[in-house]
Structures are given as structure tokens and as C-alpha cells.
Length: 327
Ligand code: F6P
Image (tube, rainbow, N blue to C red):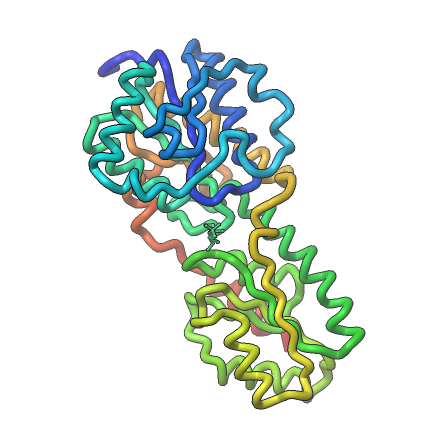
């Protein structure tokens, strides 16, 4: 080993996601089981720059596997994007005698981690934690499954009113630039259509689809709209439809941050637990600047650069399935 890792730091950064706590628990316990000291860093990179650090014992992560959010708190830091910010973070690492970092987060978290690792030659392992599922190299990110289930439950409830009042519901779904949540929730909830950035679906096509569906035999419809698929999101789509079809009784529901909360599903807890243990294993195997992920049920190491830069595809069969099943 180039140098012995005696102490690691662990932080959560960017948008919180259900299962982050399960990952913190797994990292802490797996590290301690391997004789490595754990220092928890609060408020993501901001806390790293401000030296908000506390040593964790196995008891500090008791009773958190079922909790949503992150006990470490999270933040999006503009300052860490600057060289001065990262220098301050490095000074904290030296002061706290932290030899390696485990960062739990998404695209922005890994982008910062990669730069920091390059500049200061620090071993860093990433654990994918985001509801967006937009990281390449892992079939699922921690929190995605829980968010999917939350959206499905919400849409099921909206359908009750949609059917009773014979309305068209447009439901805006998060995902940053990615449509995984929207498309998969649409399939799971039996929605009539999904509008996602990965497919060139123009408002007219949507209007056609809804028009046909309603004319044939449907008296209510649910369409999921990815937040950034169309400028203005679901509200913008509603404006177009209301103008052409005021009789549809269009309603817009923006699920917003509801989608990020709640107790993680069994899937996310198990994923987070496996990836937390795998992150410590990766460090012991002298891996650097990799994300631990899951592909076809197996733990894999993926370079952070690939996880961020390569585009994860929307499966075409899923897109086709939605079209076929919504007739
Ligand atoms: O990346 C997670 C996410 O919830 C995205 O889906 C969404 O676009 C964004 O974060 C919202 O960010 P914020 O919580 O800062 O408003």
C-alpha cells in the first residue's frame, strides 16, 4: 500500500436521498470492523472547508437505517468549486489527520471529488446517492427506488380524483436532466404518457396522444412531465392543452421535494449497505477516484470520470412499453 489508511472521512453532499443514512452506517461500521477510524463531516464540502468534523463510533450510526434524509446534513457548495475552497478543505483533512474520503452524492459531488483528488492526491471513493439515477456505471443509485415508489403512490392517489372528475392530470417529476424517474414511474403507475428530455416529444405529439386516448374510451388521463423536458415544466404543457381543450379540466401537480423524503425501501437499504461496505473494501484494495456501483447484481468499481461523463441510456423497450400499454 502506498500509505496506510488509518482514518477516513465520510460526507453526504448535494440533494439528499433516502438511503444515505444506511450508507453512512455501512461505511462507519465496515471501516471500524477493519480497524479504521471514522470521522463524520457535516454539511458536505461546506463542513469539510469549515472543519465541522466529529469522530463516529458504531453507536453513532445506530437506529438510522430506516431514516430518510441524512444525519450528516447536506449542502451544495459554490466555494468548493474554487481552488481556495478546496485548499481550505485540504487543510481540514491535514488537521484532522484524515487519510481518505468517502463521498456520498451525485454528479456534482463526484465532480468536486475528482478535482480535489487530482489536486491533492487523496484517495476518494464515491457512493452514488441521488434520486435521479443519472450516474453511469450503476444500475441504480441510492434513493432512486424509494423516490419511484413515492411517485407511484402519489400518482395512484391522483388517479382517484382524475377518474372521479374525468380530468387530465399533469404531474411534474424531478430528475435534473434525466427522465428515469419519470418514465419508470409512468410505467409503474399506468400513466397515459411521459414527457422526458431523452425523447423528442413535442407538445403537439402529446396533445395528439391525449386527444386520441380521450376520444376513444378514456375519460381521464395522467401524464408525467419531467421537470426540465420542456421549459416551464408541467405548467407550460398545461397552458398549451388548456387553450386547445378547455373541456379536459386539466390540473397540474408538482410533486417537488416530496420525492426526496421518506423511509428508504428495502431495496435502497440493501443497496446502500452493500455499497458502503464495498467502498471500504475499495480503499483496502488501493482503489482511488472510483465510484462503487451495482451492475447486474454485482458490485463494480467505476472511474468517477466515467460515472459523471458517460450518459446512461433510457431503455428503448421501456419507452415502447409505455406507448403500447397506454392505448
Ligand atoms: O438531484 C436531485 C434533485 O432533487 C433533482 O431531481 C432536482 O432537479 C434538484 O435536486 C433540486 O434541487 P434543490 O433541492 O436544490 O432545489
